[in-house]
Length: 245
Length: 301
Image (tube, rainbow over all chains, first blue to last red; front, side, top):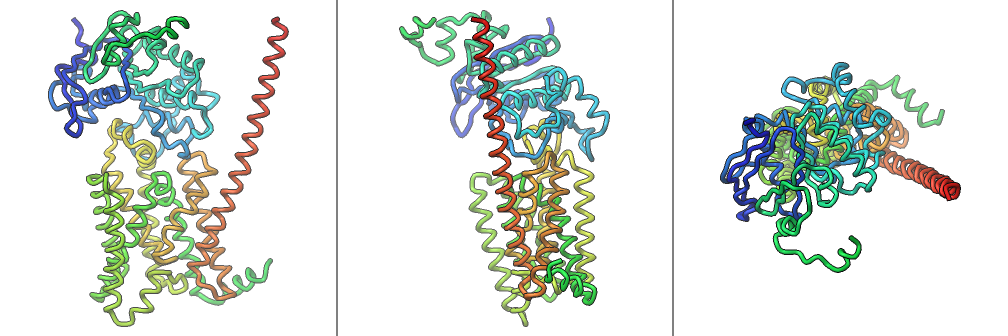
């Protein structure tokens, strides 16, 4: 059998004496599109940071593409949560995307012509060609999100990690983005964190609920069991929800 | 040509100290433009302020031991840069408190040392408020050397510096030695502080380090353009300040900073008006869109 793209075994992670993740096991296989859901503070972003090797687990083992997370970093495309960027940074779309081409062999001087040609197909694919000379400040939330996805793609990743790519984006934009992910999924493995379980379940092949522990659901049907795992306790579906459904 | 301008230009032909002052202002604005832009986008103006005051401590110690204050300034600036880097990397939660403490202690040390040295009053004033009219040729050469180092650093590491300033975590993930670049950045700030001390003095270093870059940030689409525009603005403010101060015999450093401050307010106003216009246009566009949509729906019905 093929080795999984992400392999996590018996992982524990503590932060300031509090257990954030406990006994997490996860295998993500080549070509999968995994959706990760769970409450705020449930450990989704922490799990991403562990997979990227930015933090170390207290116990357990992670391998990514058969290497340590630190070694595998350059093959991972990471799209962090959008809120943390200084939007007033003087930078065009093109320059931001070029940043994805940084690497140990590419960090001196200015961007060269071959860097600019290399990102051309990515700008095309993400629909950023007409916006390439715009400042980040002058973009909408959805357009900015596309820039950070393009930046991740510029590094030629085998694995794409997206942290809440659709937060603060309108529904139409969200749908467009997921169409793009579906297209990208044909050539790379994708893990996406989302707050919107109902929406994400239409697109992904498997759902993982992260709430201190991790439970996978192979079916993408929303079952009471899944919802219970997601919130950590049984949820009574209200009359209102039933009526609108 | 206004009278203050023509009298400045006549004086410029007559006095070599005025030519040197002008050259000092121009050399300072290069450092302002390059490093000030990085300070503004990385939001480390407060660290730069701490650094400037700590440098006074180093200069004071150098004066006390009768060595060259510039040498003392350069050495202490680099030591302080490393100290600040260490604090901000390992003591993040209390960073502002620790920097404030170092800020005050550095300045107090400098004042104590200078006060115990003969002829201190002249020195102290020129360190605090600068005296661009007393700049000598050795200082000019040193400033040119520091400018050269800063330009070389920016040219060599431009895209890495840009990435570290924009998104440290991502830069780290792409294999950029972020800590090393952060230390390099602080050392660049330290050298700039030493250079600017000559022109406007300690109190006003921060103004010249941040104001031209802050103005430029509103009107540029890349960091390198921001550096260029900030350099030009810095050159304009130092030259303009010098010019304004010449005839009425005002302190040159303070004139430069007041001019830069006025420029900043003016830029904010322009920006505000421009944004208001953009907003209005956007609003009109959406109204037009909505109008067209209703037409469209009418036809469908």
